[in-house]
Image (cartoon, rainbow, N blue to C red; front, top):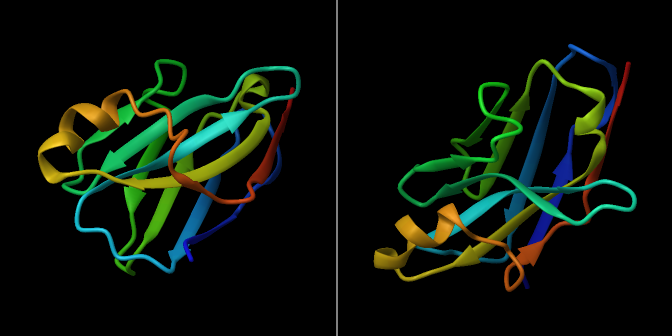
Length: 129
């Protein structure tokens, strides 16, 4: 059974930083999309950043230059370094993963919605002005 556990959320002032972590278990995927999504109250869920199995990354325009997604040395570990946080970054942040054939990950991960993937329970990020 796939499990994803996020941590690292919290409350910070605008301009501050947080580092989110996601640890996955119960799966071994050779090729996949993995990423971070967020949902603010009353808003639709949106993709924040994705990374595929070869390390190619994609970012939402709203976070480019401020957020960095990376994979950890430990298996099935994912990070999101968030700098220069803004109040509009306030949301519940979720980690997700979905396997794809290797030849599909390049294109799929750029537009991946995660709807058919496995998800964690989320970690809350609150940024005050």
